[in-house]
Amino acid sequence: MNIKGSLIIFLLCDFLFTFSGCNSKQITLSNIDSQKVDSLIKVQKINERTIIVNFGYDAITAINTEQGIVIIDAGISTALTARYRKTIENIFHQDDYEYVINTHGHHDHIAGNSIFSQAKVVGHEFCRKESSERWTDPEKSMTSFYKIAEDYQQKLQQSVPNSPEWDDNFTQKIRYLSAYYDVKNHAPVILPEITFTDSMKLDLGDTTFEMIYFGKFHSNSDIVIYVPEIRTIFIGDLFSKYGRPGISDLQSTDVVKYTRAINWIGTRMNYIETVIDGHGQILSTDDLKDFNYNILNRYQ
Image (cartoon, rainbow, N blue to C red):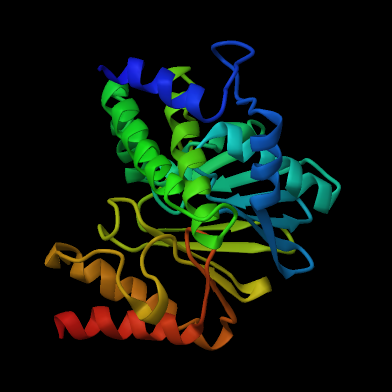
């Protein structure tokens, strides 16, 4: 059976999606599934003007500044990010978005950019090329997203309903099926319009965003973002707990960039209180120090 035939059976056995048009940014779930999705969208409050909105491994951060809201990463699909946007606006009671900053160009960080259409999108110069390459073969992308969703569907059937494992499999299935429909319906993919090569600084009055290119690591376009006013650093998918690097085979070609970026982080280390990764996990400064040590030790 081909992928389209399998998909029809898969959807009829589980939940129905309808579309208001080929350019729709919204996926309409059955009432039960829609309520379940909403129940699994969580908000982590970092401080009075910073929140993380996540749905399983999908996560975006919103920072309220005097010039508007800044979004860090935009999620895996337009349908889910549209729900995150509503959550943000319900909390901040405003809808003025100034910037979306992409920590790197992988689809699960940039696919929701278009939901914040009035915002200017910022990223490393390689982010545009890396992002666009992922959409040049839509059939390949659809096949990949569908296969991942199908794998999680199988795991879901083997899980205890509403257990943490079930919730995890459900959120992953929804994430990748939503991504599938974005490609199928030609949802717009907005790439960074403001880019930089080495470093960049955005000044929004009461909030400053300092950015540096880390080098080719987890992706070709990894950046680190430091916001001194909230003592927070965003590290994308560079590492996880205990400083475990987000790549197994480190290439020495960018060692100069790695070293420069780590030294840049080091000069700010004493002022950092919160470390946020690209999937909504709050890490410790010890995790950050361990990562720095792991990378520098690899090449010294």
